[in-house]
Image 1 (tube, one colour):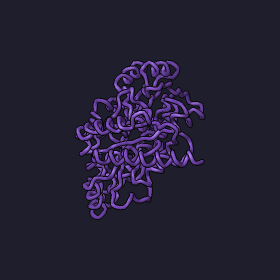
Image 2: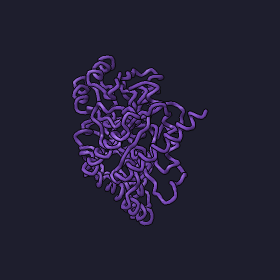
Image 3: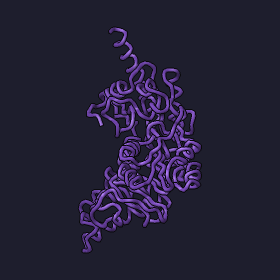
Image 4: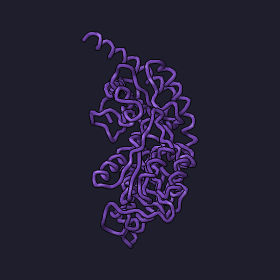
Length: 381
């Protein structure tokens, strides 16, 4: 996050909730208590270990409740990236699109380089993965292959047809991995459950960074990425942090009724896009979208330049995935959907449950100021 302070007398406007969410006060409190009272190794059998283990198991139960699973099928990980990597490891074949998070697309690329059969799914300007395209790709892959699908795209907010794709995949004898990092706690569970494996991340739920989960359907077998101890049934060796687990548990339990809090954000998102008018071209708006995400391409303005200028006005948005930040490349998601020009000028605004209409108005005013400044600078050069 930028160290730049907002203009004097005005609070920061944070509209980058898809990158990370502000931790809940209850999460911070739970972690502080755990750090002082339950800092032991959860694998130890003595009292200090048992106290730590209790927090880990409480988090596992909370995640299971959110995912509609049995706690025994929840593997705690270091975050969503590790959960995605773990779900895809050891598959005889892989399929996914360029719309996926880098923690999926980079795995597909690396496995392809090793000779594993990999198919990148074709996508159109809707930003939606079509079940027919999944069926085509699976016809070219061995049985038991894994298809990766984000329930909600991290950049456009497009909601993918998880249930339809799952039917196609099972008919082909394949397995579905759902990246639900951007969906859990924001959409009704029937729109993102149903995979053979499911990735979650605590810091997208107003929990701490550094912890996530891979949820397995009963009987699903996966190949460990790391080798070591017997923690997490040997599927994810290494000491689980009870402090992070304490925060994850609080956040996951609260996320169960999160969709009701997110529903109202569609009104704010739609107001923003109407107010921007013909200055922008919305990306993914022709498909069903999560209520809190707007991705738009501005005419004649580079997205990263606009993001930096808005930061100086105290408004925090993004020009792509936080995991791709710092690169000079345009958004690979918008590039796959709509081409390089739209990708270079794309800006993502992601709202959260605390976002207000006043903050949307602040954003619109800041955009007016910034576009006028950039226009003046361009005309004088």
